[in-house]
Image (tube, rainbow, N blue to C red; front, side, top):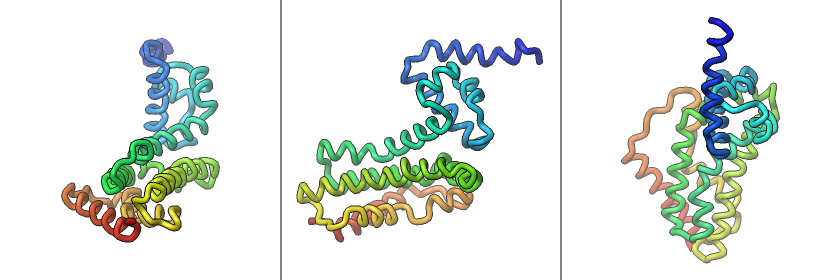
Length: 217
């Protein structure tokens, strides 16, 4: 392959990126990084590869994310935002706690079963000791941030008089445990079976019912 042939895909990607809006360009970089991190690992993925896949330029990537760790942090924050969206919306619009908790539980279960979750788990097992800041970021901006938002939501419901909880941080851990159990671990080990939607719905209802029986006002 000639140098011109090798450069052609990058040139095409850059032309496409040039037509994107700033938000779409940012998302294209994040999508490319996520796939490369899952396929190759964090250490083996270069910023040049991410730019080559997504288009744009290294200057744009540095401007948007600072460096590779900043890009990793943005990916974790994006997943957390998607997961906790029902809770954040409910804190504004005061939705029915049963429906809100069930929707959050459904999203949490889907995340725990996802390829992204399994890949992140394996990535931390393989590279967490070499890059402790990645593991710390994953926990702080992922599970820890999600639990803080759950606790904030529960605090808002306690203030509204719909729930009676003395320790919302502990109640958050209890609720997440009711939903997840060892789903993420079995997913990472490749022994998780596909969910039966009817059974999943029953399991979510049972978890929410148990939680509200304990903490309903």
